[in-house]
Length: 315
Image (cartoon, rainbow, N blue to C red; front, side, top):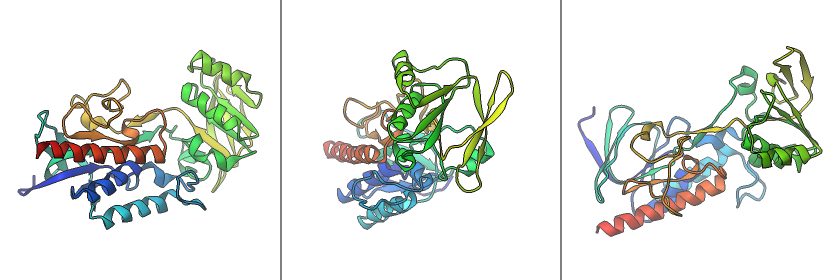
């Protein structure tokens, strides 16, 4: 452990839209925030090649460039952005208590407030060709990337409500949507199944799994396999959407902060307050409904305002 303990007003964990927006507001409130980016600087959005739905970018942008813009804006107001990973937390349950944070296993920080914006990680199948083509036609967010496949054929992998929602959303944009369902039934709610079944341009292939994504630099098709017969066939598509869920990055807070059964942090009412005073959660780490850059940014703003008001009550 390092000998010197750094004492600060505000620590921000995570560098996606929520974290950077929180940093902008916290810095402007003279909270002198320190941000630790985590291993993926810029968060999930850096895996998205094109961003067309974030306000202010009239001609669109790409995820990496947008995160760099947000970083520069946060730094302009005095945020100190550091590359590093929080490896241990000891959060105080007392109002006005000090939260003790360890970074990279050695750096010690004591913070009056902590904003958690560590995000969530999309689950993928782990196939080499799938991983290679993320950003080249493979996506985990239809509302983010569906527009780019207007009037084209796409495939959705998954059988739950998320997959059904992605498929019905894409059906309004794309020519044809094919759903790959591993079992002989869908796990989605009956209401969502009815929506899928009533949509003419959605085809559901049961007992079917993804075997290979075809294409060198962009998706040109998929090879699927029937897990009962073993028969394989190809489907020509330009977009592949993996909808098998997300995992919130909250392992560090298990047993410390309140979370739901899937690990999303629970916040109080319409605020970003967690069950620990002075600890706030923003972005996909507490939002399993919308998962959009703009909504994450909104909760980042809320978290900074909540933190500022919390510090005000201590004065």
